[in-house]
Image (cartoon, rainbow, N blue to C red; front, side, top):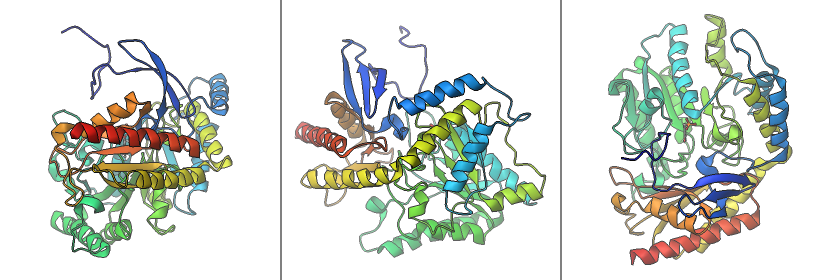
Length: 457
Ligand code: PLP
């Protein structure tokens, strides 16, 4: 077989376009066969990465400034002001007393890997080394390193043979997926109680003192197309974790840092004085300008380390990298100075309402859901029974392809392996998006849905 590329990756689509550049919510792409160059809307900021859009002059300037400072210095023997300032900025802009310390790494997977190690070490500090099991959820995604894959539903993504830590160490419970999984005769409250009870039953049957942490995404991104937690769900699980001495961890790599219309997505689903013990962040943190993600810990978690062995361990060569942190601080400051989290909420509400209005008669759209600029659309074969399309049809990808042809990139995800979930699409434009740009996004999408409906006959 002729070698087509010198890179390896999980998804190898035929003839992927080359990206030549970007400005605001637009990307310039080159067709690999015809070499035609055109501008398309970056409707999901590639993988929900962008908060500011492409080519922001202030961030480009911050990158120049950062490059002139210092190439690198080892974080275990030196401090840098940029990392310190970024950690302080995030801690002080979060609900009061929620977080006390942060570390910055290179990717969401690395952040989750770091978090899992911290959970082990926290319990060792506390004299409970047997707490080496995690509870997480089916239909979830947390990354592509061995630990983060293990707490995710590794059958969910990509066409690879699943790898994992031993299953008895990585227990799984049901996802929170009201649209498909709440029974017709079940109230929201009863559905929430059923899910929380399942978590408590899992603690009890595993042996409550063997569980280190429960981990979930606050709003499920690529795994469930922006499905939000039902009222009381996160608080119920947090209470169970604390009842049995485990940590409550939220993964906000995709839904956090303003994407959901609040700085942390959980601010909409938990009382502000009941945040997570540990939280991971990434993606829009650096808006794609730099590769950065992070782990935030609560004052109580930090105290266990400080009063124990005296250090919060983390030892990556590139952790809290000065260049990345300076650029990221510029991104974060710009988001607050320009009220872009409010804009993410306002434009997200408008996107949701426009999609609902324009697609109300569509035969293939089952559910439109989400918060802020984090909106998902679920495709459905039968609106009455909510029966999904055959996953083999790959309709999520097909619809994304039509959108691409018509001038917009959005993420399309196929049905699950077990076929119980409809394909879904994800919208996550930059927080800077305007009403006119949302109108364009909706217009391309509605037209693509019409085309797909016709194709299906
Ligand atoms: N956690 C969540 C919720 C994600 O959506 C992702 C990536 O999509 C990750 C973790 C892993 O992040 P990364 O791809 O930066 O390693």
